[in-house]
Structures are given as C-alpha cells and as structure tokens.
Length: 138
Ligand code: DCM
Image (tube, rainbow, N blue to C red; front, top):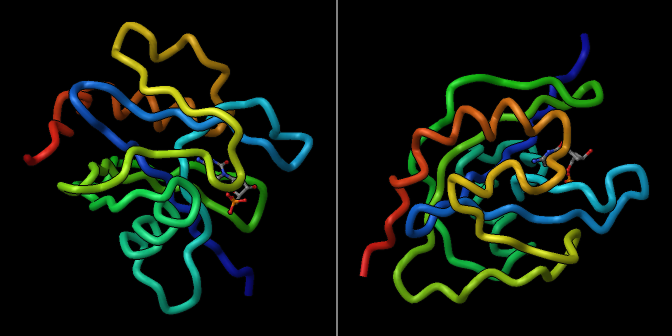
C-alpha cells in the first residue's frame, strides 16, 4: 500500500493581502515562493499541523479559516492541501525563522510578481477570490 502524506499550506490573509514566503532550502526549491506550511504528522489534524507549522516557521499565532477546494500532487507520496488562515489578535508579525529567507504581503495586483513554486500556482489562483476574507479581528 502506498502511503499518502498531506502537506498543508496556508493562504495567510491580512487586510486584503496574501503572505508569500521564499524558500531557502532545499537547493532545488530555494528562491521560489510558496504558501508556508509543511507535513502533517501522524495522528495530527491538518488544521492543527498548519497552526504548528506557522508558529515554527514564522513565529505567528494563526488560525485556519476554510479549506481551499482541491488537492495538488507534489513529489510522491506528498499531496498539497491549502487552508485560508489569519493572524489571531495579538500575534507577532511573521518573520522568516526557518525554511525561508524572505516574506512578502502581496495585494491582488501583486500576486503574480513572485516566482511561485509550480505546484502552488493552482492553489494561489483558487485563493485569489478570498483575499479580502482575512481582515484581522481587533
Ligand atoms: N511544499 C510545496 N508547497 C508548499 C509547501 C511545501 O510544494 N506550499 C513541498 C516542499 C517539500 C514538501 O512539500 O518538498 C514538504 O515541505 P517542508 O519541507 O516545508 O516540510
């Protein structure tokens, strides 16, 4: 039986902008931009994995909002699923703590200014109509 491992990505939204993160590793992905996230651990709910990954990678306190419809194949056995997410009140601003060396908050008009990982492009496209959903609770 082939194991299927879910990688969760966050469409982290704030004030009509989407966070893009530039990977610093591995070499074949470095310099490309992604929706931050990572692998779901055994027994872990995907939304919990996403909140954990965002804390580890960006130092933020985030919450997921809704699943972006679809699932995109990565290098087997990985598949990418995406949730919209937002910062919780009092969260720190995101910083590139691990895996990334730059972050950008992109407006709708700026979305295609960065070189997204090929596999993230369809997920980013699906997220565009939701860009205004992430206005932060204050
Ligand atoms: N990955 C991806 N797109 C994302 C997040 C991750 O293609 N938005 C890929 C990169 C890695 C794998 O998933 O091959 C696991 O990610 P990580 O190394 O961040 O745990």
